[in-house]
Amino acid sequence: MDNAIKGFLIAAGILGSLVLLASCNGCRQDFKRIKSTTVGIERTITLLDANGKTIKVWNINSTYQTAGTGINFLDKNDKFVAINGTFIIEEK
Image (cartoon, rainbow, N blue to C red; front, side):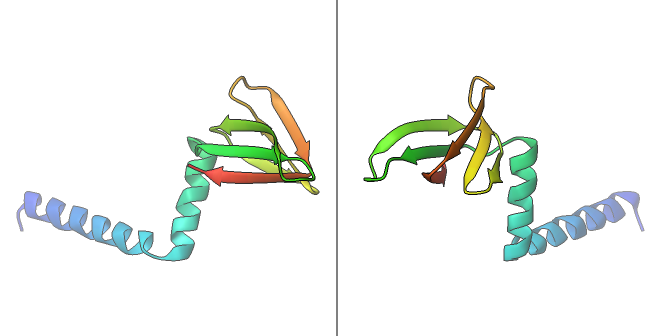
């Protein structure tokens, strides 16, 4: 068999496997987790007061970590931010 045909068949097999893996929900979550920890995912974090009014909004492209009932993250200026209370995290 010609080397070009072998290479094409191998590439087609790898591509087909990736398409099948990407279609399962658990695999999509794994891919999203990997993307989040490597290149980041755009997120908006909104801190709310007891009445549901916005106190502050951060747009980040980094990961966040939960800490009890709060979260920690780095803002766009690489400043460490720790919040606690009522907040919403939205992916863009």
